[in-house]
Length: 318
Image 1 (cartoon, rainbow, N blue to C red):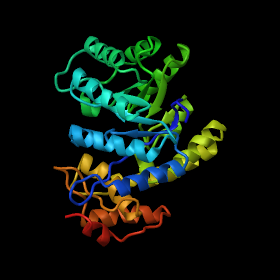
Image 2 (cartoon, helix red, strand yellow):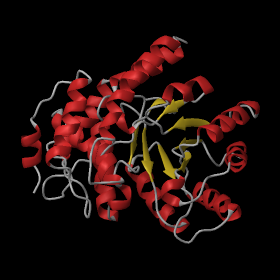
Image 3 (cartoon, rainbow, N blue to C red):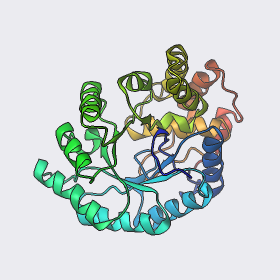
């Protein structure tokens, strides 16, 4: 297994049973499916992986199962996301003990600080845990945009290995790529986008962390291969197909946020026969009725073959 991080590293969606337990069979099926599609790593316990919905016990259960199922075939990055530094370090030490290849952490949140506190946060994590550390830039959730100059400073100092950018700020990401290259490329830069990965690659990203790869990974691995070969027409064609599939997150009505986004991923995976249910973590409700049918229509219009009917998926949850 290579410890070099790059390429396609999906943020793995966590499947639940109808009783809200970890669905190990579906989890293994999903992990095997993505590895067989040629992904270059897996990101466990990210936003799509229900990290903030999971107790410490559930986090450890998910990480242990993922490490077991991956069985050394690709690097496993583990999200260690919590409100403040000491809690993050606790999670990171658990991830290290269980066999993570790298850890991923956001800025502190709830008790908001400034740049000095964010810098110290990452330095303390690095000091406490001897694993590669990725900064997770997701201001929509933590209410702080990580400054590019700080990220570059931490990269040059050997504190950060890389950045998972889910800021949806393409301009800042492009500036970070340019500055990173001028500094000798100390950071591995991964885009967390699904629909503009082609643009990120053209800018010089080192890889992608697309949640949609849980639903359809082969398009992302083909895009990565085409990018390495500088086959830009194929890169664009694959992105166009994936963007059409990503419409699954726009068609649900009457729900918003996590229930519409990850809810659509889970529903699509249940329709495709990857997950046994589309169950969501409490207090989020699973998509039902017309929302399942709308997602099924998007999938079939994109040429994907359904393994189950919308009615069968709806019956899988309570």
